[in-house]
Image 1 (cartoon, helix red, strand yellow):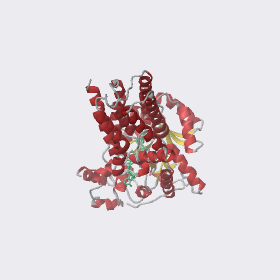
Image 2 (image 1 turned 180 degrees about the horizontal axis):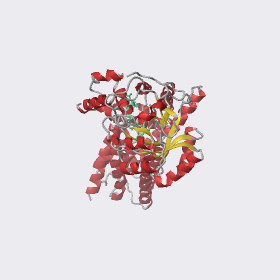
Image 3 (image 1 turned 90 degrees about the vertical axis):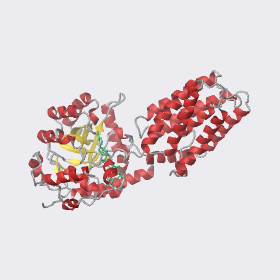
Image 4 (image 1 turned 30 degrees about the vertical axis):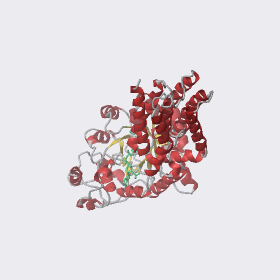
Length: 314
Length: 206
Ligand SMILES: NC(=O)c1ccc[n+]([C@@H]2O[C@H](COP(=O)([O-])OP(=O)(O)OC[C@H]3O[C@@H](n4cnc5c(N)ncnc54)[C@H](OP(=O)(O)O)[C@@H]3O)[C@@H](O)[C@H]2O)c1
């Protein structure tokens, strides 16, 4: 299969929109797969976003330590330089939002372009917190006027937040609206909301070992035209602990995967319903490795089965 | 799963140590004076030590949990509350004259002194030997686990200490131990084991 790496000019709408139809195709055809283009469209608008984004759980929660903050800013610099777009965070992630804001300000101060940023955070109201106040605080911490995507974290108090976020989207205070879950939690309730609510994005866990989402959530997202953000693509690093001692299979070369990270990300990205994956890292070399998953071919259905069989045999 | 790593706690300790040095020396000196008082009591000393101990717990609640940890972990205010509770208990017993620090009348004076040595020297040293730099060491009256161990040590120098005062240190042993285990931090883990053992002994022995 020929490989195309799309340019990252978000306005230069990509030919990938044409692939949108195939994204909606749920069964992975026997020997065909989506090309490993760098961008995919958000179904509700057609706007393309880079398929590899970045998460910030744990990795960006470094508090006020100046050295660690600067290190994370370097991770962001490399991320943007390699065409990264979506950065995902949450008020639940401690100081992560403040550290993102610090990084953005630092990069902008140095004249580094951060225009590609697709800002995604969450509303997570625990202990009597007020959603609107929390979102205002998140905007302040990030230093953004509005968020591209606001998600309801783990469906916490969604009954309150969903109508408010719909109104925010209507009024242009946020661009897109979504819901998140992880670790396979609350899939039934999550699916019910997906089925009946006008969501732009859904975020849940999907990786080579945790494939529960294949049964219901991924097909439903494609059916409903909802963009899918995949979290925990490495099981919060657990997959490296598990596989690192083993060599990649020979057939990894067929998809240009040189490292386990690329192997695992390409597996996720090859699912036609996936819009974007958000691996988290503290390291510049790892962000480089992860961004390279946008290059080269993606596995087709046959190869994906071999990938699963291989890792399950380890 | 915790929202931070051991590396971040080490950075936090370094930040606080850097900001507060050489306050550490003053706090160590006060601890030594408390032991001296238990050996050769002076009038008003019991109450003063009890109040200072209460202040120590309040200070750790403020500086470590509220100022340091709360931006990193949404559960930190709950831990701070636990430490404030112990501060209130200590203050109440100190003001009621229920804390008499008497080395010669205490049930386990050597255990008390041993726990104090562990808190002041042993745990930081163990932290150093297991990978922390000097600036990153968790020390008494700054970090929670060494402070709780030091408190237990002082309570073992008290003649018939109220058993309720062992409850919060034991609760912290469970929480702090679980955190230390999850993050792979040997020194706080050792401190938690010492807390549980000491607290268990105090509670079981009437
Ligand atoms: N309910 C929710 O909304 C929810 C739940 C979970 C996650 N999320 C989002 O999804 C994001 C991703 O999930 P996650 O953070 O749990 O875990 P993850 O992305 O599956 O794994 C992160 C771990 O992988 C390691 N790693 C990253 N790139 C690597 C590479 N190239 N080589 C080797 N190791 C690498 C990182 O270590 P290094 O730092 O050493 O690179 C880190 O420990 C989160 O950060 C968060 O934004 C959302």
